[in-house]
Length: 252
Image 1 (cartoon, rainbow, N blue to C red):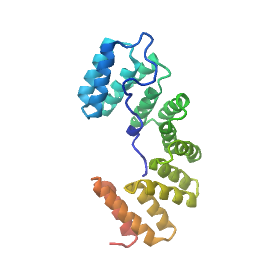
Image 2 (image 1 turned 60 degrees about the vertical axis):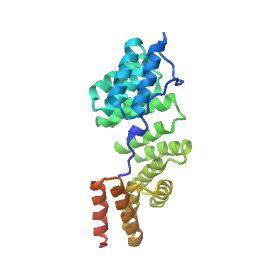
Image 3 (image 1 turned 120 degrees about the horizontal axis):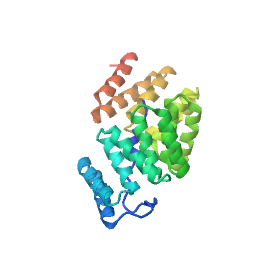
Image 4 (image 1 turned 120 degrees about the vertical axis):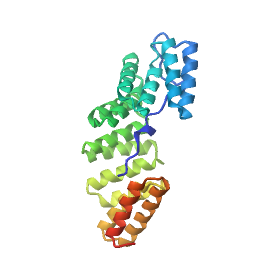
């Protein structure tokens, strides 16, 4: 249940990023359009962002960062085929452009292909070993393919790099739970909740562990907090799931 959306990790490249441009370098017009595209996407205007990245690519057809960003925006717009085409092109133009691998990993994850997503996230981490989100994404994919031991190691790296990242603690807790480390899992869920008290999934997961361990009062408190957190976010389905767990405890 406690899985952060990868969209947080598949970030747009800002103008003037340190990643190498195409060999000839983008033109001034391409850079200006690129920066406008980043601003449009930041404002939530996805269609206008695509238009600006189109302009950047038309002005400089080997502008790898523009392909990488347009691919991510297309993915957010539901154009999976277009996203893969752009991200593949970005990587072909610049095989060391880490965000392109991160974004393509997100695309593979959204397409239901964790092994391919894992390969891309690992390449991203190889290129940028201090990118905590890259290790976090590796951990998520390893959880999805049923490898909690390696997932824990990936979350260890993510937490070392981003020690205040609640989602990394929550997902490491899930890995520990699958490995049979109840004490460690409860500790990590506690850290995740301390960092993000509104994490309804972490609250529900800890509640289920407490219920299984006989702590009905603690479980009830967590399920009520989880239900309230999901209701606040407008997630009726998950709020109902927390409510059902309360009913199992006999709570009203």
